[in-house]
Image (cartoon, rainbow, N blue to C red):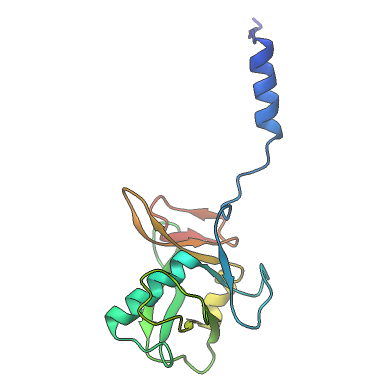
Length: 166
């Protein structure tokens, strides 16, 4: 037995428009900061948003981490419900083989305790394979507050957003 569905002209038009709309851009409306010496949206780089820059500066000042020597270590480790988990912590200096990304020199953010000092992100070589092209954002919502990894290398992630698979 065949099934027939009736649609009004307006419903048909809405259905066509919905199908024709491009995928939602997760970076829409964000101000991205590119690391010194890097090209914007380069595959072999990491970018951050102004909101992430502000939160990193505030947290570094609170933890007593010097922007001149220390930085934020961003990486991945095995585990989590999707296979890999993001890790983020402060470190006093980069390691020998780390990639170092410098952001925000002279960029003022509201409530900035560093007066526009640049911040550094340290990424180990293994983690960089999974994080290249990523954007680090800071999200403040009613139910959630924290860093958000917008990672083009992620093929699947869990509901909490802290683990993924590539």
